[in-house]
Each structure stands twice: as structure tokens, then as C-alpha cells.
View 1: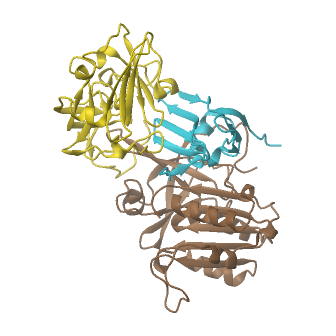
View 2: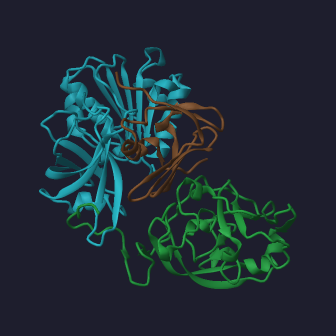
Length: 250
Length: 88
Length: 199
């Protein structure tokens, strides 16, 4: 079974960039060919290691945004941080054909399995939508029937990752709903001013706690804390809330 | 108010090098306050080579990993017990 | 060593012959902590030396500020591979603080607010080798860097320079502190690259 074999040793592999596309002016999706990739579950991530000629090396974790098997590649969506030493390399310098070391897939807690029957509530902040997108894509690939709702918080409409694909999926699949939260600038004619995610939004656009949805919250630490607190305040069972924080500011 | 940045999900790779299975889904009992929760919910501090994972409730240290080039030290004295689900 | 990532430079740094082995020179001052930053109001701050029989010498912040202090410029080396050269601190020498301490013990455990500990042999704290520092780069030491005061013992890896220092406890035998018991080296000499237990 993908990603869960007990005796498989975790090793650093050398992957190759075989494709790339910009999702927004500052976010780039890397399409990687990884030899002997064992497959992965939606929600899992990889650790990426970069090494400079003098031996200096550093590591970061990135969620896998694609579902498996897809076309046999894996996709990471990298948000460029202005002073990020790794993100700026991956968005600005890393070229098709170049190698990269990665380790994975890892993470067995923050995962959604297509066999789970409950409705799913996804709360994503910024690039935290990446593992949630893997879940949406996995559900799409198996034509899953579990109803999914995504509440996606971004600064401005231009910062929304996967916007076109999400719009298409929502249009074509009545079981998938999407609500944006804009924290700095809204689109024209948006019914409310920019604001952070709040109880009212989750209450209106999420699932009621009686439905016992599986909840996944991912994003910067402050977003995750706020969103998870809202879910608990609305009555969701904390045992059904899974969170993934990846640092940074909101 | 804490200023930790990442949670136990970020340890998945380092722990997977030691254990033959994912450990972030394992439940751990905090020796400080008895809270039972997933390793993924621990709050991480520090920086490679030394990582500290603290209890989200009482903030006591639950586990520490020090990763040398050719060996890993795992200190679990802050965990009363860890329960790892075995794949069926 | 991992495969080289084509075109990857990383943050501004250099490795130079005058650095300890395995270190890179940094131009910023990374904040690395094992836990949340404790906030200690100055009217509650105390620094205590406890000898092996339990006798204590305690200074309040006011008393501490009245002690003779020195301005020192030192190089610091972190086990995470960053070194900073020529850092400027103001602090009270441990020689001053230990002037009236009655002890025959050779080992110390340094304690910090928040529970951090690190063990340092007494002789590595004396003879101009260590300070309780409360100013960095001409300004008050910020909490994220260990303020109100931290130990500064630059000839050892910087995890030994305990932030938020609250006191020093004399020990008759050596016991490992927080990082030493987790796997870092018991002594921590950067010039012999003593990073981990067994190095």
C-alpha cells in the first residue's frame, strides 16, 4: 500500500525536475520525477535538502500537492518568501533537468484516506492549501463521494494557489464546495471587507459538528491556532481535527 | 502565548530514519501532565542538530532528537509511553 | 555530503581558516531556543550562586548593576555551525561574582529561567573566561537573545552560554545539563569539534 510499507527504509533520493509552472507570480509548482517512488497518501510531505559547493547544506519540508499515481511524477508547490534561502532557489534558480535530494514520503497523521467515509472540512491558509489540494485531487481521481468543503484564506485574490483548477473542480463536482477568505484585499463586489477567518465563516461554509467531519487545518502557525480554536468553539470533536503548522507569520 | 513555529509533523522524516514506520501518528503520554495526543501535535523548538518536542498542554519536554552525522540520539524521558499502531 | 544543488548558494556566509572546523561565518544573529522565551520582570530577577553545601549568594538586579562590569569583544560559535566574530558584550565577570564564594567543588550546573541547564567546569568560568552579560552590541540584551542576562562563555559552543541565566550551582561531580543529556558533547570545545557525545 502506498507510503505505509513497514520495512521500507527511508532514504534520500535524487529526483529530477521535469516540469514547472507558476501558480501565482510568487508560487511555483515543481514537477519531479523520483526514481522508485513508493507512492504517497494525500497530506504527506517530503524533506528537501540543498547543498552548496562548500558543503553547506540545509533542509526544508514541503507538502506533496499532487495525488498518486497521477502521471507518476510528484508535485511540490513552493511559495517564494522574500528572504527565504531555499524558497528563492526553488522558485528563481532551480531549472528543468536539475537534480534535487528529497526524503519521503513522510507523515502518517495528517493524511486523508479515500476509504474514510465522513464529510471532510479543509481549512487552508496561504500555501497551507498544498496538502489539502492533494486530498481534493485524490478524491477527484477516485470519484470519491465524500462531500468536501474547503475554506481557503489568502491575502488577496492574486495569492490564491490553484485558483483555476479549484474553480473547475467546484463547477464540475457538486460534492466540492469552496469559500475564500481574503485578509488584505478582496475581489470587486465581495460582500465583506478584508478580514481574517472567523467563527461566522466557518459556521456558514463549513460542516456542522453533528456531521462529524474529518477536519484538516494547514497553514502558518497563527492561522492554524485560530482556525482550530474556531472549530472547537463550534463544537467539533478535537479528536477529528488534524493540524499541520509550518511556521512563518500569517 | 507561545512563539513556536512548527509541530511534530516536521519530525516525520527524522523519526522515520529511526523507526521502520511513521511515528507522527503514534500517541504519546506526556510524563509532565498526562496529556495523551499524537506525536504530530507536539510543539517543536530548536534547530538541527538538536530538536525539542514539547507538550502542547504543559510545555514540558516530551522528546529530544540530536542528529549527528553518523548517529541519532533519541531522548524519550518526557514520554511516559508511546503507542504505535502497526499496519494490519 | 549530499549531491550539490546546481546554482544553490544559501544565505550569506563564508568558511575561513580562522574559524573552528565545520563552522560558517554568519552576519546575522540567529535566534535558537529550546522553548518559549521566559519574561522576567527586573524586580523579580535574581542571580544565585549555590555552593555544594547549599550556601547561597544572591544578587538582585539593582545589586548586580552595581558590580564592576567589563566590555568585551569575543567570537562565538554555535553547534548549528554558525560563528559570529567580534561580538560586543557588556557583563560582570564570573571572577567578580565568585570572589567570595566558598567552594571546593570543581563542577557547576548553570541554570536558566524556564528550566534550561548546562554543565560547565568551574575552571572554564574563571580567569577571565566568562561573564554574566546583559548588554549586546551597545543595547540591552533582548529577551529572544537571553535578556535580561545570559551566561557568556565564548570558548565553548554557544549552547553553554545559557540564556536567561538565573544561577550557578556547584557540583562535586559532573552531571550533564539539558543538551548534554540529550546527546551534545559534555564539554563542547569548538576547536576540537566536540559537538556530540562520543566525539
